[in-house]
Picture 1: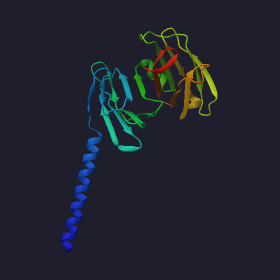
Picture 2: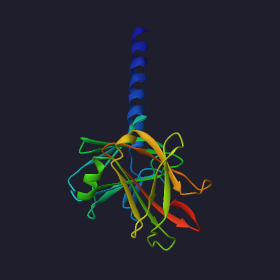
Picture 3: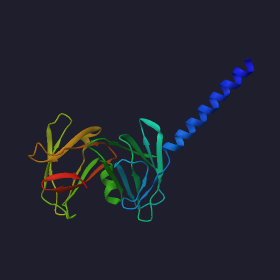
Picture 4: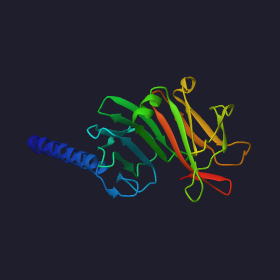
Length: 218
């Protein structure tokens, strides 16, 4: 009788271990490749993290910090691009060569992140930066569009305007590290607001499109 109990407990442990490993494998299984985004597909959501790196030997790992089992790895393709699309909402950790660490959050407001590891962005990333690109419905750059920047207490702390190429960069955001800021079209309280977590060693980039005075994700 005692031996049967021991064998039964052993069998339960064995089955539990198999189910755990199967669940871990399943959560990390790639579902395909998105040619347009040049990213690996890991789920059905529209959340996407894109990485640009001229050094193809660098390896990247993305982990959901609230669920350590959800972890994916990737490298750059022939066009120096890589990333993942389909990640669930949550807070993630991006590791570059298992050394450099960058945090980002997917939620109802943030669905797209982009990290550029070239000479320009390497200089920006050490100081913390917010980069915004704005185009019209024909994918043409939209200069002269002004946004208001707010802190977590809904206090306006800055204003920025897109340049001739439709881009604008806010750098040296030391005072806002690890804080959640938001921005929206200036002087339009009823327009959509975009939220961003500022952090040291992090570039937060937004690719946006404006149609009929409405700004949305590109």
